[in-house]
Image (cartoon, rainbow over all chains, first blue to last red):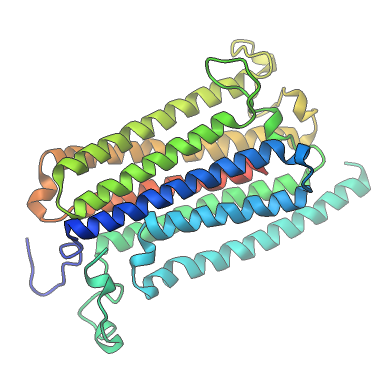
Length: 122
Length: 237
């Protein structure tokens, strides 16, 4: 049932055949990118020791590559990049803030507990 | 993407009432809010994995020394099967976004094609996970029937685990993280299938838009997103 007192946002999210072509091109580009990043991660995971990269560098590059992958999935596949900025902030900002806080608390405590375990020989 | 969300609208009009300031429908916004709460659950799970990992850093097993099996071969292929599973899930996410794109053009035939392929990809991933679980539970001897040297919630028989306290936490997190994610994949496949039936019956043709495909699409992409993090923080690091 169509009501005239509310805006049907879902009804006007259509696009034309030409626009669809451009969107599909973008989708295939992101697909290639995600595949390459995953392959790079696996190769790095298998060969980092024999190439001689230090583990700390490998670890940080894993995390950065993952965040790049996640960014493309959220912004392109989930269309969050096409939504209004206010919605983007409502979704991402509180989440990022909370998770960074949680990670800081947990990882900080974990390294303290590790030292306690070592000192007490547990 | 077109429609209300990219129109330039004056802030006073946008926030002046009588309309959604985000220019999205109620259903889509609620799907995003649900995904935030689900992301917090997964975020908490992965953060606690990081906690245990750092607390027991000296006895935490290396995943490459445990996950090197591949079906139909005895070759030593570390992490290759998990990488393949990641790839399957990314591809099924791509077919999903193509279904959403076809829906925006009211192209029923292509929505059916891409959504069916998404369901197939999801089933493929679930089957892969079943294989992964059974080969992990079987332990280093590869026999699932010998209970004493199987990987369970209480023990980790792998030599790479060297029996320390980190080893048992490693198995527990394997079952909890991949199991919780697998449950999400299962419900995602069921939801995709229900929506696929609706598309075939012409339900969304009648409504005038394929937003239901977009909403289950959001959930499906979220599952892919979580797996990207599980792959890095459980298997790679």
